[in-house]
Image (cartoon, rainbow, N blue to C red; front, top):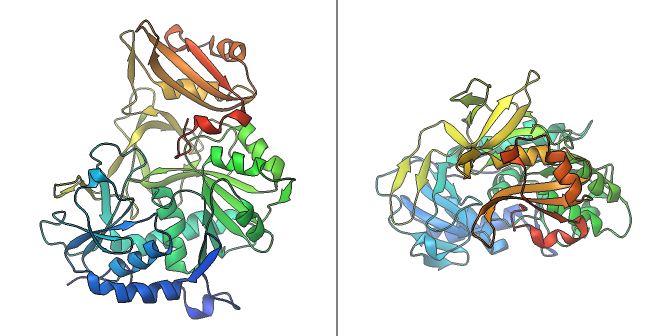
Length: 437
């Protein structure tokens, strides 16, 4: 028998902040990590090695109790997700805890994790990795991402997120470090940022979110608030200058960083000075990142490897499929002379427009350079006549004529036919739950 995912907290008693226990704040309630672990170890009597279990990440405190239950038993697969019909037959064992049969068909000698990707639809292809490395993931992110956020502050005691907990970003960047390192984890609703404001008045906090949700949250502040103790890690694409301006107009002196990665790759790069809409920063220290299949222009497929990367895939009603240690991302990119990483389009996003291949992401990056633009999405749509057209959805203080003039320098095939401009105040309904246009 091998080892479990969780062997104990990584923070020595002498390293804990004096005065109170650390734990999970959720819906105005609190439970310490020690109490959740104790309940989880009792629930572990339901768990057997060589079996896969789904933890319903939407079930609040019960999800964490069941997390500790599965994580305490060797040689299991812990799938952190929201139950869905496409995952196959689930057998409920306890609150937020389900057994999934048929996943592990050959004996495993290491614990595994799995998580649904944000784009999973239909029969999902679930990335799966070795769970005995998740301790190292927490330590790596703490040293390379969290600790350098504030000057003269090496240990941030509170991590926070307003993202749904089943999202991979919340799991890797907030939940795992908070659990293993016994930091406070604050989970608050995306429409009410007051809990984060309150924490930031007394101690340093790092919050995982997305640009659109953060901008809306900042506009909910009745007046500018001192947020100098808060750091925002924002994913889901570029952060424009206008977005940074909006957030800082209400969250005074807040630290903002742009982080890039996927469920399959883990965190890849970090930009600590966002707002230029050009690159996505440099690779996270300690994370190997390189390009494969490089063309004459120096553009290639972004590739990586590491303890936060997937090693297998699983599709419902099938066995685990080995996927190797190197993960090729879904994006093309290139590096500049300073080591900044640029995105040059999705590998699967080359689309035919009137028989010619175009890359909408390249056009989006061009539009983001226009003053007043906060966000942009370019896609191929069909007019009522059935004719293909290139459509641009643009959020910001901008009008159609400005966008068309800005795009006039592009090749004709890259110029949007249809331009839809949305003010920031009216943009909330334009975004998905993942913060994307």
